[in-house]
Image (tube, rainbow, N blue to C red; front, side, top):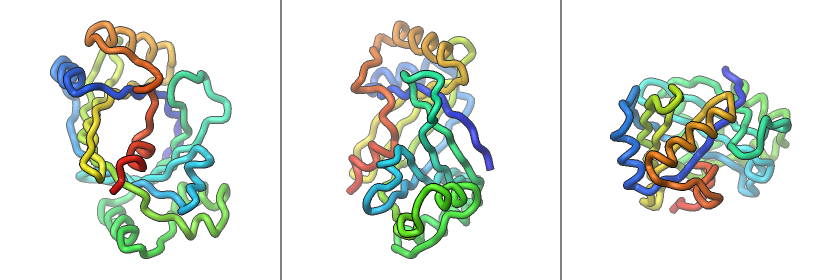
Amino acid sequence: MSKNLEIESKTLLDEETYKKMRDAFTAKSDFIQKNYYFDTPDFDLKNSDASLRIRILVDHAEQTIKVKENNPKENKYSERIEINDLLSVAQAEQMTQSAYEGTFFLFGGDVGDYLQKHYSNKAIHSLKLISWSQTRRILATGPENCELTLDLTEFPDGYYDFELEIENDDPATIKKVLAELEKQFNFKVNKENTNQSKVQRAWEHKK
């Protein structure tokens, strides 16, 4: 299990800017991840500003619940408490297959403990697969030796988009790096392209 405070900027890019940025920085890693998102029919998690997912990569998987930070360091960027439990790929695939088939299962580990403490048994027993996404994720070192995450994400209806994520413990560093990238690649961060979560986009683009 891991529990950490995640502070990150999330900026949707157009395809041309994404490609220019991808080509400008040397990739440290380049991989595919599949994300499966869960909620109740009444969206109990969404309504409490939380999200629940299973993520599957080539050699490992994890279950994660992200919840609102009640005492944020700042208000400009996405700031969440993230609780993770590692899963084997086989475990995760069995769980998502059960979800596709509509077969009930309980989330265990620290994610399950959080659900038990903060949601009713009725809500927990009504959790179901809401949507999914598949992301090609590239990690690269950008300005100020800060890690950049470049995502190309496809959703169930065939829609895809491009996103820059900058995660750092220091919001001032995020601000500085983002400003340098805006200048270098001639794009502008605004309300429409900032901090739009993947789970929200997955809901909007489910079949």
